[in-house]
Image (cartoon, rainbow, N blue to C red; front, top):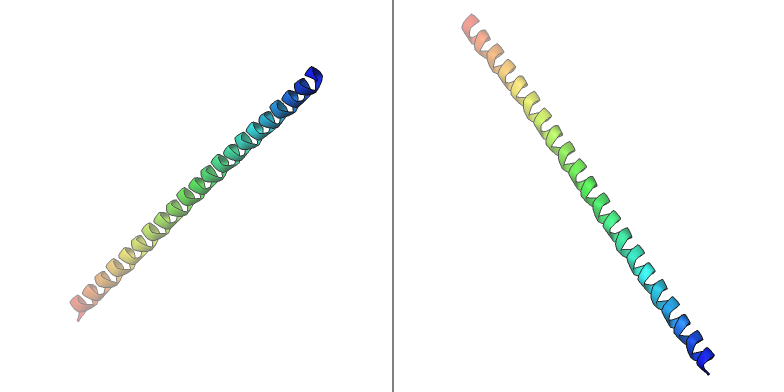
Length: 77
C-alpha cells in the first residue's frame, strides 16, 4: 500500500510539474506574441509618420514652387 501511495503521489507531482511547465510555456508564448505585436505597431507607426512627413514636404515644395512660379509669372505679366 505505501508503494502504491508513493506512486500516486509521484504521478500527481509529475502532473503538477507538467501543468506548471505548460503554463510557463504559454505565458512565454503570449509575451513573445505581445512583443511582436508591439514591434509591428511601432514599425507601422514609424512608416506612416515617415510617409506623412514626406508627403507633406513634397506638397509644401510643390506649393511653394508653384506659388513662386505663379508669382514670378504675375511679375512678368
